[in-house]
Amino acid sequence: MLRTWIADSVHKVGEQITLQGWVHTRRNMGKLIFIDLRDQTGVCQVVFLPNHVEALTKAAELGNEFVVEIVGQVNTRPAKQVKADVITGTIEIEAFQLNIISPAATPPFEIEDEFKEEVNEELRLQYRYLDLRRTRLHRNLIVRSEFVRHCRDFLYGNNFVEIETPLLTKSTPEGSRDFIVPSRHYPGSFYALPQSPQQYKQLLVGAGFERYFQLARALRDEDLRADRGYEHTQIDLEMAFVQQADVMATVEQMMIQTVEAMGYTVKQKPFPRFTYAEAMAQFGADKFDLRTPEEKQSKVLAYAWVTDFPFFETTDDASTGSGWTFTHNPFSMPKAEHVDWLLQGKNIEQIITQQYDLVCNGYESGGGSIRAHQPEILRATYQVMGYSAAEIEASIGHMLEAFRFGFPPHGGIALGVERNIMNLTGESYLREVQAFPMTSQGRTAVMSAPAPITAAQLHELNITIQQ
Image (tube, rainbow, N blue to C red; front, top):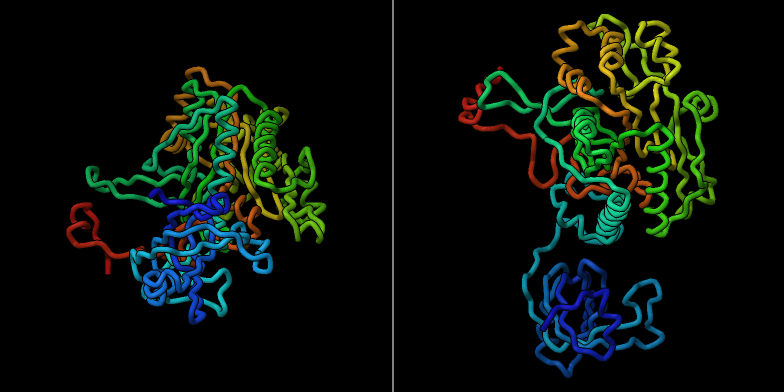
């Protein structure tokens, strides 16, 4: 007999069905035994009655988190027992047969929607596969999947092409420390894991893919905090032959279409816009929450754009020798009226870039810019930051070379998936919307890393560790 999903069982009243899943709870009432059975789609009540002796006898062996198969009939619950807040609250399953597929040891913590007492973070992550059985976390990953699906559907419907870019690449200055990977074939040389697909996506636009996107993994060796980890996923897109308003309009349309399809309310359409100077003057920060206290209690999403960021800021890094570094992205294009300042290397503190950030409910949800597509502009940016001609060639010579072969004006954005899901679910910690996050000390979930490697591996990679 074909298996029935629990969520679909409400449509099969009077029918015999087969369910498979986990025992969420068990209640022994003496002559009757009730369990709540859980699968990916929901939870339903199953009752074992005396007229099905074998099934009732087996049900006495059940414990929480046992994996079982149940054959039974879908019955309507008595009116007094209906649970209006549960999708299966109008039915229960009368069990005819019970097959215990896999018994379960006692979990190290209760699999409840909310823990009755505080559970150590590292214990939760050590047993993350149990932690994810909780309804709230399970729902968060379903929301994440639904968000990504709607965004993908929008992009496919608007002539975007999904293309993957490499995970092993070159270390380049993009704002954070790189994670580096030693090369066995080139001793003393290293790959870097991508902080973003920035250069590759620009090269794809130059290759004629005028609308590109991907679900990109980004890895950055930066300080950890509640809303930031070593790795995250971003909806990364780039568009050719566009101006700033075109990219912002496309992203705004995608976000509205996506979140409204998921049942959320957008506070203001079109999204309000603030310059960086206006945001700092009004809110004291370039990330802010426009909701009222009442709106914070409901599914209201207050989006806003922040534009006109300073291109450069002063730096204490003496290695550059210039005193300047980029604020967001060195590949950005200055505002048209400031291009000459950049090329001449003057009025550096006044140069404004065509950078735009999408803000929602106090978080930065995405950031992008119109890109430099002419070699002299990108070269001038690195000159301002104190790079010599040789250093510029070593860092971005491949981009300067590519720009010689007919590059269109282009721009894009990266939307942090985790940050957006935090907004949709109301979570305050990144780890609650990732499947296998790291601990706050930077150790991986379930499989303990970082960890030492063998002497043979070190030898093969020509690496010596100093004691």
